[in-house]
Length: 631
Image (cartoon, rainbow, N blue to C red; front, side, top):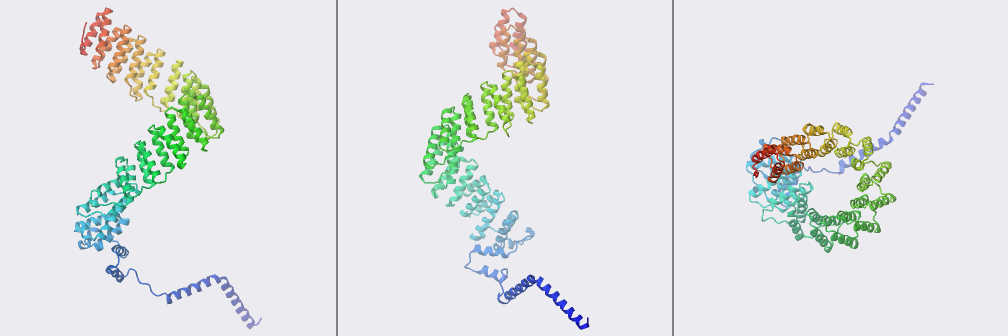
């Protein structure tokens, strides 16, 4: 290959390479050319925009007499930089200059409310008065400061501003009250809203013609339970315009909270008369108010009106009235309402069936309750623990313990259904009451397998079962488990144990229970526990122990006259005169009261039995008790 040929080949290779590179970058090159063309066009034909921040424009804006002051202030806000330095270094003349201080405070109110108030107080200290401001400046300043303080939850600062206004004998602009009440309501500062109104209303020149103010105040009064003020706010609202459905709703809430069924029905009547829309919430609230006031006939009449006029009834409507009938013991009407509900195409809910079950069980109509239960299963109504437990309670109360246990087994088989502590408590008590202690213990085991912690009621029922079986050892085991499980015993627990110990003649255990165990568990032993054991001792002619128990009682409290009456009466009846005398002496020592008739009875029986030593002891006790001695 010659030198010329090599040169030609080299040039062709370079051209091919450049062409390939340009083709690969064709999109980028096209974008660059278009962008350059547009930029040149804008530079040549677009002209030059004026600078909005130029001093010339600012001066023009200030001097223009045709522009509103508020617009001018907004323009000033845009061009005036926010002062961020030390407030104490601001010149007094500047602080007193409305043209500078008002925009500064308004701008700070947007993000730094506390600093805005510091500027305001600094200006006031420098000698600036609200009177020195134009009406428009003053209105803008107060609006910014009041709304910002409420926005950050410092309504008391807003009250301070209104006080400044009043101290300078300036009238409050109604638009400021409108803004304040709206913001307070939206921020749920209900009490503060009413407080601001109370302060503002002291200005006799204030005229509130904005409906929203009274609407907000009515809502706030209901929320703060200031029920005595709601009527006034509502009347002022009615003077301006027709109240909205929400306003009527707030008045219905007032009627419901005060159980004023007459007002509730009156409000519904007014809404119908004025063609105001009534939703199901208002209707149901009025219905519930009538039911709560036991005005079931009025509630039934309202239900009929709802069906005929607006047809806004729902399941809640029927459930509310059904619950009222069930509570009144009128299950016939309750069931009738249930059937009407189904006829009108409404599907009963769990609550509906719960009302029926509970009502029939309270009336001891277990068969009807079972019918409702079967209906629920047929209609695939989802069951829950409460419904099952309610039915179990009904069978247990009727003494059908086997049937109650069958329902329990059915409950355990149903997927996703688990008994709760109340379920087990009912079943354990039912089995213990019929002497099936071992079955009750199996239920306790099942309960713990489900990770349910037995409570005091469960243990008390089991201890009661032990009492029926006179099984002290098992009772002690259960009591120890109760303590180890950190279940605190109650007075009822110790009453059951005392009964068991007395029944099994375990006198020492019974006395030690009151002497040591009760206090060790930090349970306040009621006097009735001592009285219970003392009376049991007397019945079994355990006079020494009875006196011992009475002495324990005097160490904790002063025995009552009624307890002394019971014990002394038993002593007289059982001829346990020595014991009675000792009880009277102990009563006299602690200043307990003894009825004169009880002391006289003891003295009379001692005289008949010819027991001079007992008579002498009784007379000495009577003298100490300041009772008359007749023999």
